[in-house]
Length: 352
Image (tube, rainbow, N blue to C red; front, side, top):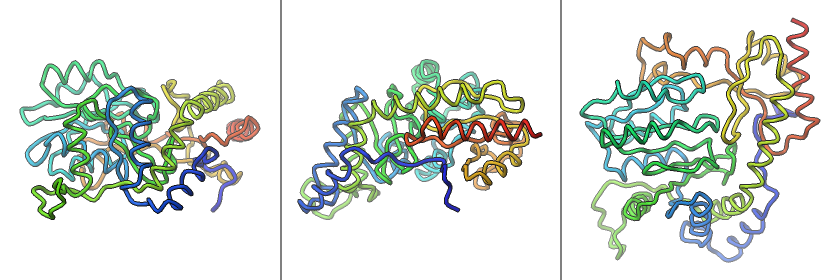
């Protein structure tokens, strides 16, 4: 069904059409077009990082990051229990093993539980900034220093959280803070890592393009048309983040003191407005009838069929997954839209 109030909607009211039209009219629509490099440079500069390497998706970005760090079979990577499954899949794609750590009350990885999961095979930690909440990166980086680990930040939901790890990976899917429809980008200050990321995303061609490929690589390139959209989005990132802060504040005000609703900790940047709800499925049906879309929280990685571990019912990640949802969150929301949405939530619990 088409919702009047969908969970997400891209904001394409900048120079996206102008840039895409320029790419098409100029004939530079492949990954070789100038807009990919312009986006990489602009996004890296905004984040205060030296190098950006664009690719075909956020999952591709994570996979490239792990491969660039030479992580593979026999290695272990620390991954949060509470995340989207692509975080774990990227590790599995390399042949390494994801080792899961439960979340704290902010849904991010519980940094106090990381050390107990470190073994001689551990090579990296992958903190995820869930729903736009920055992980405790000081604690993560201290552990990385102590145990000589690499840090790959999964920043798919956190454009605006400045990177501090070896490589930060962003998604540009249509529901993200900024988008190219599909796409991803890696950020790093290390020029050799940047070179390796670019090499791996483009099938590991040699400089003379001789069709001799010395390693297994990927066709994870971004098109110029995606780069054009991503550049236009990056130019408006400050504006987009400011609008999302206003949306978060309106939800906070409109949903406070509702019996049955538990508000979540503030976010460093707003991706989705998440909350916990008693009688969640009944609430979702109530909102659905009023053309308000909602989505559920992630399920623990240890509950996923590919990583099944009988410990999953005991996890914080499971507890949150049982009653969590998020509401429509995009820059097209007006104050009237949010008043309607929060009013519908209030009406449900008042009637109950």
